[in-house]
Image (cartoon, rainbow, N blue to C red; front, side, top):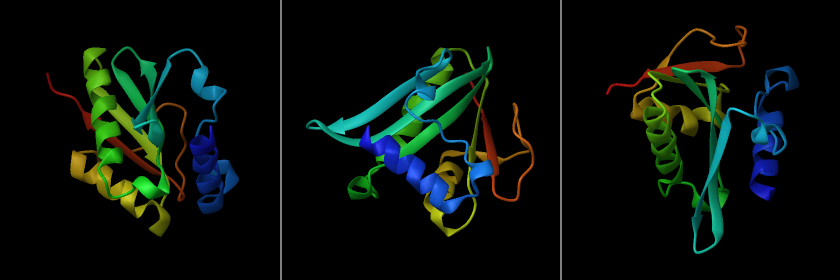
Length: 140
């Protein structure tokens, strides 16, 4: 999938390799991960996934919007969809890891506007100056 390849290229171009936690197509098919896409008239506009960390905690993974679709609400649509999937599964918390710096400013702005807040590393992540960790408590 070309959009996933672009996502990985972006991640490796803007973060040290040891701090790239994006998943490739093979890893996105692992147990506990659900992958979604946004299309308009067959055109792939965005992708995202949710990974179950435990029965109450999910993680957003491999969020990416096609360059031509940026600014059209595709990312927000995907995050909101993933949050609704998380709520339907009974998760009480959803977290994510993303990069730092100008390249990641649009994503960080989106997550901030939706209600994610900065947090300490979660799951198997370790502190890194190249990662931003965010979380959101889900209410019923």
